[in-house]
Image (cartoon, rainbow, N blue to C red; front, side, top):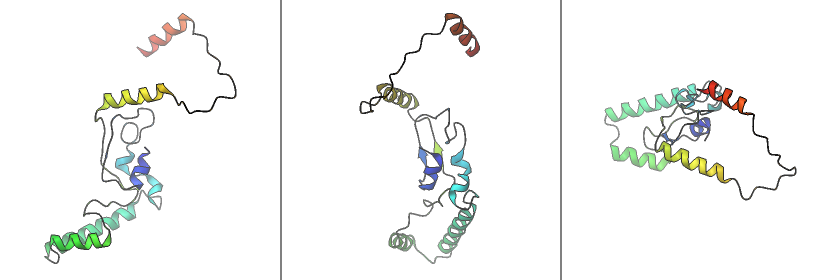
Amino acid sequence: MCAAALSLLRFRSVTFGCPNDKFGGNGSILSVHSTACGGCGGGGDGGAEQQRQHAERHQQQQRELCNGQHSGQQQHQQQAAAGALPQGAQRPPGAPYPARGGLLAAEAVDLLQRFYCAGNPNAPVPHRPVRSRPAPPPELAVAAAMQIG
């Protein structure tokens, strides 16, 4: 899924199986998850203003807890009444989030390969016939192998 969309959805963290080495945004190509998502967070500054406001709210909550103004149960009841997530769970939209990849990576790659090889049985019939390509001459195959290796 798009790293910017994950950031906007305000997940606490993201865990995924295999990175996308072609256009991945969770650290395989770009680190969108750790640098915010630019203008999509609102204001074009990666959500910097929202992050600052969130940090101020968090500091205020910490001061209130340290001063003994709220017990843990009272604070939980206030948050539940306001429909808020537990302290530390809420991030401003577009803010960085922790991401961890490689969980069951081999199994994830195998699953994706099987999915794409199966094709879509519900796909419409193409309007034009699909032409098969002739096999490349053996000289080109050897040259390509030498460049890769």
